[in-house]
Image (cartoon, rainbow, N blue to C red):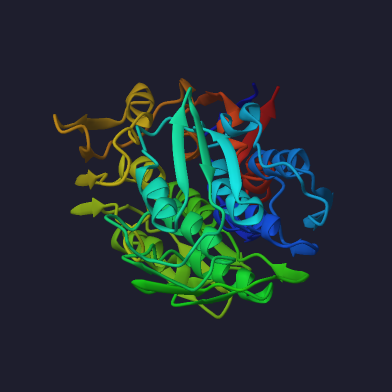
Length: 419
């Protein structure tokens, strides 16, 4: 595992272009299993999660080639309904293959997923929705085995707008008989992008981005060529990097509307925000203001994937902020590491609410990355800290960021990656 070595105190300034979204491309790559043909996907981020999904596709029997940021998949000869455990346990989002493999072969065997340890994150909603489509599911020995002679459309009311459950049900329903209606569906922009991708393949899906998604099953899909949306979490991370260092940054190839839940909070800290069609500009104030209450919530609320980064930022704001995590009960593993750097953070007894009182200066330290976004937060803290910071366990950060150290160096950071 590698490390990020950071010498803090550099004001970041410049321009960056944002690449394709991790949380959009992964379900698209699962969706290609449903298509007995050629799928060409552009703007795919070259991150470890993408490479892991490619391994899964090859294990299923698909022919996959990645050239630059374009992935070409021929799933015509896919013939294996068992998803290898060694890959699934490395990445939680691999559970998305439950719906697509079942939809293609009428059966699937997949292990419980691994990935970042953010709490239990049960997949009950996934299984409940797939069962309502007519699948028989058995859970045994750490594996999920599902079978269905023919999936049939149904009305599925989600107890919580889970992104993963919404995507799995959508995938399973694409080739099912009749109409499937998902109410209380996840509204994230990545869900809309997935709908657009499925429709480009010949699926009949509507309503993404709203409470109710409707899928009318079709018999076959066809070849497709598609470009993935930009990554709003990467964009938010880089904007926060500029803010925490008192800098300014212009991002290109972004969707400002997707970023609004993030930029609105950055504006609360005193940052100047300007947006154009595909560009966002941020200029940090001389002194960051606290946020009275930052509460994570499913889209269009503030994304949980940006909570650690904003907490790092608020650790340097003048005053007290309340940060409430409502999505993942173990999202706060970065707190102890930020405290090692001199942050004043008190995690309340509920384990979900934190009181963050800004300090004048964070101090460089050796810290450990324990999950993807927490690792990004520690890097941001290191950029603002006095002295040297070493962030270990880079493998987590590499799951969601393409050479983050190179992007940060472009805008003035003193950071290097050490194997």
